[in-house]
Amino acid sequence: MDPRTNPYTPNAGAEPEVVVGREDQLESFDVLLARLERGRTEQSMIVTGLRGVGKTVLLQQFLQKARENKWTVMDMEAEKNDTSAFRRDLGSRFYSALLQLSPKARWSERAKHAASVAKSFSLTASPEGLVTFGLDIAPAEGVADNGNLTQDLVDLFVAVGTAAREKETGVVILLDEVQFLDKEQLGAMITALHKTVQHKLPITMVGAGLPQIAELAGDAKSYAERLFKFPRIGNLSKTDAAAALSEPARSEGVLFNDDALEHAFEITEGYPYFIQELGYAVWTIADGGVITRQDIDDAIVGYTAKLDQSFFQVRLDRCTELQRAYLRAMADLGPHPQKANDVAERMGRTSQNQAPTRAELISMGLLYTPEHGYAAYTVPQFDQYMLRAIPRLAVPEKRKRRTQRDQ
Image (cartoon, rainbow, N blue to C red; front, side, top):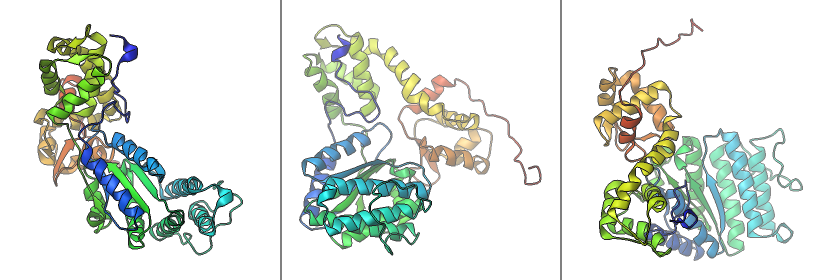
């Protein structure tokens, strides 16, 4: 069929033509904004799930809803930055949010104060003068400038939230990849949001991250579980998966028969990203108005090769030889979460000397810890890919650690 009409979108964060199975989260977001607009409090949420289940897509749905309700949106992706870079980024984004609330020429005293607080917050991280926004605005004195990230961020949230309330609107921070914030940064964000809840200000943070984020948030601040909901999104049901695959095709006048939909679900297991890749692959080889099971079978080779060369390989390319061996050893044990001791034993090592490698893979976002002592891949079917990519487990020889004396 014509590649120009291919209705599938196998791209990172790309919104598919049909979003299904996320109605509960969308409704929760509507309730959150509606209650804040009325001066009432409501738990925010951090959506959790594996790579490719549609967390970023869901955040973009939230963004559209917020803008339709005339809310100001700060659309962010967390990175592994030091505190200074984190401050500068947040300060400039809050300043931009104030400009969205109202043109600078029409700022009230509260808005001007909030802008001064934003500049003060950023300058605390860059006393040498790297902050360029708002050159004609003096930083606030004694507010958001004491060097304590948590206290300063509280000042910033409250100042901007107060300015938003005056305009009878609100500010929502959409934060993707929350797990990349360090404990201090995450704790500061949670504390600042907690303070705005106490003041009933129309400012909130809605995040998305890997499954471990609920535990990380609880470690950062014990009351995080009362401040946030942590909805887990995952693979689609058979009905929703069929809709995600068939409805985009139907918009182009093409149908999937029931046998094809059943077979597609067996292959993708309802994983949203795989559905988009399989749909895209089938579209390139099918000929006619009805897609059959045979079309699905014919597309599998191209579908698998595309996943191996892009989706899976980009993860493996980031790894050291020892990290690859760890991932490969896990594959021998199966697709489910694996005990650290079992993986180390498969490698002929001890759990203690493999602990740093495991921690590195978790920090890289390639593994997560569903429970204490276990680790699992952050994308499904990665075990099958590892067996294809590295047919035989090869563990590098142990290297003697360099001592201070050697250096």
